[in-house]
Image (tube, rainbow, N blue to C red; front, side, top):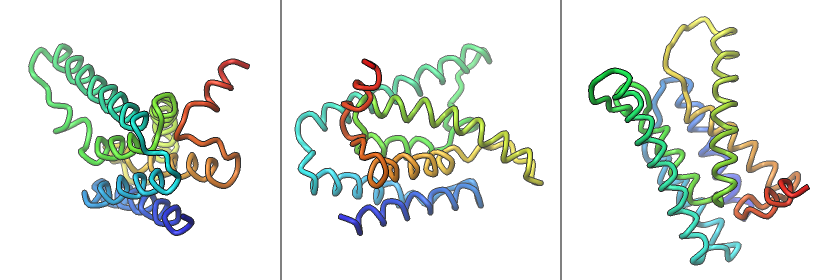
Length: 174
């Protein structure tokens, strides 16, 4: 189990480094990341009907988000806009799809929202200290670092178990 967790963090680090350095990520890293997430769930005996249900809900939410953003930009510009050509990279979408195989529904929503906020903050900090003025945000890379922190906190610090929603529901009820 420890080896799989280390491999997972290594893949996340590679995604970060590739996205920062070249604004592109080798596509093969995303199926590898997905396979590692599935392996962790299988080893922990947490891959049943509830898991597939959460994956489908997360994917549906992500698809709805992409559809709404695409519709908004199409409406705003008065013509059909494909957000995958200029605004969002395939790596960004594939990264989020990979996380759907690990996170429960509320944890996916929590990660999605907080990581987008963190990406914006990191991007402004990165642009402030960096010399290159690239307009493209390395979203998958920044989210990968944020997810590394999320996983590390779950696995070794607080043991929240982000594969189910109990800790978030408990936090909300308090």
